[in-house]
Length: 98
Picture 1 (cartoon, rainbow, N blue to C red):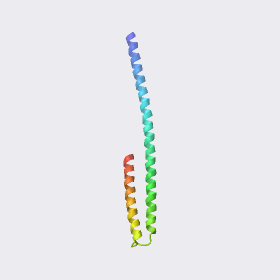
Picture 2 (cartoon, one colour):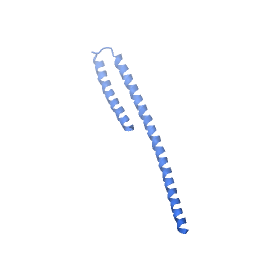
Picture 3 (cartoon, one colour):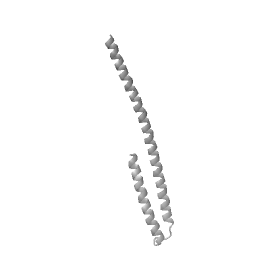
Picture 4 (tube, helix red, strand yellow):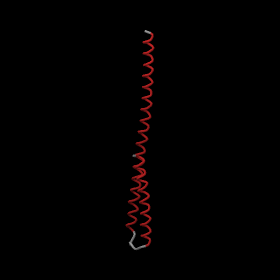
């Protein structure tokens, strides 16, 4: 009878340890899920800001009077460079979150 009681106590303790470990794992999972959600939101915000910047740059480019104007050509080259940089940053952010 004493051996059965010892075995029962052993398995009760083992079960309690497993339940506690599961609770800790669930807490960690919840925290990581929240961090992932926040990261996705931040990435979406960055993406939206980038899209807005691109839209503004395109609008600026349309306002330039002539295609032959040296200022227009310089502004267009600058916008193209900024567009490429923002596109690269956007792709990196999307890759990071995925």
